[in-house]
Image 1: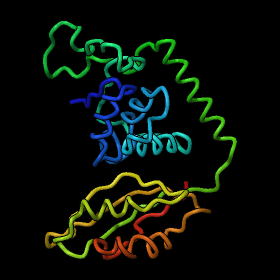
Image 2 (image 1 turned 180 degrees about the vertical axis):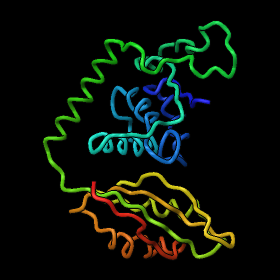
Image 3 (image 1 turned 135 degrees about the vertical axis):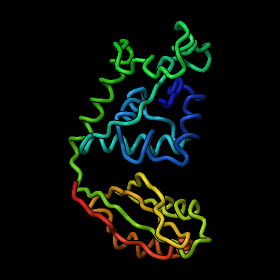
Image 4 (image 1 turned 120 degrees about the vertical axis):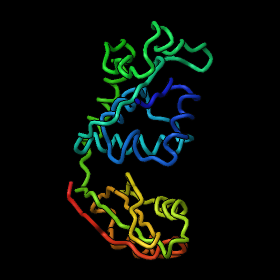
Length: 231
């Protein structure tokens, strides 16, 4: 069944999306997909930094679109309500409420790629111009890295471990999708993607000076590079 969001340019819609992305890197699944593009396209402007999880996700999708695009098919997502609805104006009823009753299993009642309004077209043109302008300032090479992060034992709180990993912030570092992978005896490791700007971030230093140093090493025993690919 498709994931449904409402009025992503309103405070209530952003709050719901921020809560949804608290423990997720992408709208659906463990990689960027067309679902992320569909939701990203609903924004008329970058989200407020007050919505920490939405801002992290939005900036990551922006970076992927600038670098190499998004190829994942996704699992299906719906965005209901006009992108121009304000908090002061009463919201229009969801699209599904204005249609004749249909079977609950019918997931095809919303056309995400229908005809754009003039305001949506203007917002899309402004985003395209911003991307083009940012592209004039060439960044150095980038790399995509997959890390294995191992806990001390089966009693390690893996949510706190991941929080410790993602708390490491530096220029040129962008954390991506993650998942827990069983390694045996009740122990799981964290597998997490990251994108780095090569001239700004050294993965070896990231591991030695941040991930396996205090205070993160309270939860993290070791880190291994599983994959390292130039973008």
